[in-house]
Image (cartoon, rainbow, N blue to C red):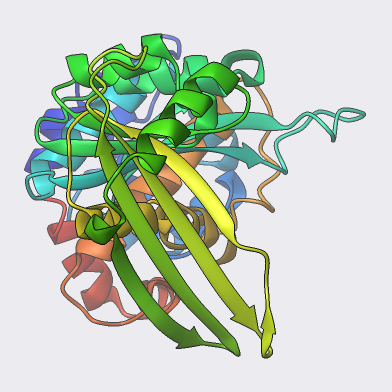
Length: 358
């Protein structure tokens, strides 16, 4: 587990000096358990007991299988920030060079709430590399402030050559500058919460040559027909750091043969792109919802997870993203759900997943 060790061995052990189990081994075993479908610390302990002989082919585990309390104590006490930094380093080490669209979006851990506070679960900001299909960042939204969480997550990353996409909440001068500082360009949604900027953007689009617009579709799926049109205009004088262009994307849908209201979105860009490229950017942004958030909830049980003490929800959420990245990058062509089941049933396949981390 050389690459894994290189990235995570620098973590400070938050336990007392007489702790029996090695921290790196604990994190490794927990990750192996999540690859097999473990959803909490009890599952991790049961996995370690059942697979002890197999795990000792990779790590020593001199004191046997760690208990539920040991896993729980580690993830409650482990500092999230260095853990997230190690995660980013590990993802970069075993993933390919990042390029293309990087999407930012917030996600609530709906099960991570204290009694009587169900309406205010823990809120995280996730960063997803769409083309690579990798989760590359996670950060707590302090006080459910998604803007600040996104800015802190972006500050940890190097994104040269990427285009960062985000919704209108992040269309701000400080966020735009942080994205540029990370070496990336941006495509930030613009809505009516910034009326002056939106009015200027609309005027620029209206003055653009309509012959330069691009059409995508119509695409048919599940009784729905969808077509999109994009128009891009240069916008060097808008009040946002680095802004170079504005785009309008119109979506027309027909569901069960009934036309739906036209959806019009405006997007600020830090570089001029073709209308065809704009259509691709707009569409791929939503990969963070169906390729990351949906999979975390449905295949890895994130919404149902009830870990809620101290740093455990944040750290266990990161473990699920680590597992998802490994499952995605493994060359086996099966579904994520299928790979998780196979890892739990087939020791050789689990070892191949663990070997893929090197």
